[in-house]
Image 1 (cartoon, helix red, strand yellow):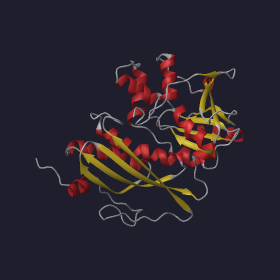
Image 2 (cartoon, helix red, strand yellow):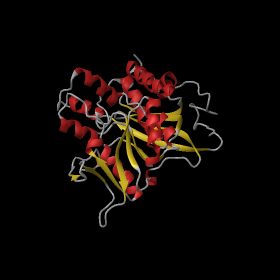
Image 3 (cartoon, one colour):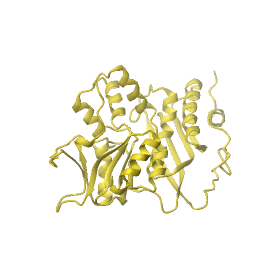
Image 4 (cartoon, helix red, strand yellow):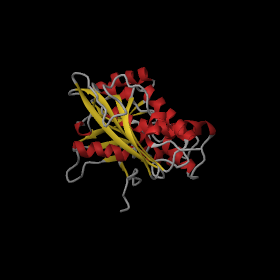
Length: 324
């Protein structure tokens, strides 16, 4: 069977009407018109086979995740997703695989009202790159550098579940059947917390999404804000049942691929955040606080017990090139 040429491939799998773009896919560039009074938020991520996903990954879920991880970045800025560009690097063309991948990508796009307005295809080792664009009201973008001393530290949802699924795939643990399904969903088809991010524009000071581990990513907020982030072990989200406690704790604190939102907010917003969690049907956990760093101590994220004693924690999150 003949394989589709580049432009036929794009036309067959990645061309749909884009009512909210002046000019979508098919030209040298898309033409977009941001809404009045809004700033553009732009994020890009690349997923590489063997690094971010297994080459044998199910294509529908992979298509979903390829877009979802970028929408998570927009959520962390408080932006409403609008458009996306997709670049595909494929070792070969496979109609069945591409059809399923495109279906997963568009399923995520439709759920979050995103239009695919362009991209590129090339031949090579399997990889995907997405540039996602969203809108946030001028002056209300959420940034990592804006945490304040005295802020509470919060995290959404189910940190650690994706890491547990990965550990089982790698043969390091065995999950109970009921937990396995939930963990696999968080790993393969993460839910970007778009509605939460938009709601936080009036409640939070600093926000980041968790892709490289809770403590690792919280440290980015601490350093950018020149503060110390104190995380209290007894305030962490409930650890999953059926897994060794230290294994579960390591997944919560250091596991990546969660795409939950980690944020700081004034204590005065605790009632509003409790109400927001109920409205979104999403657990929001108050896990710590931001403080001024002690003299001669670098801003960082650190773990503490109920008595205020620091707990040594050396298991870092994922970092590219850390062995170079």
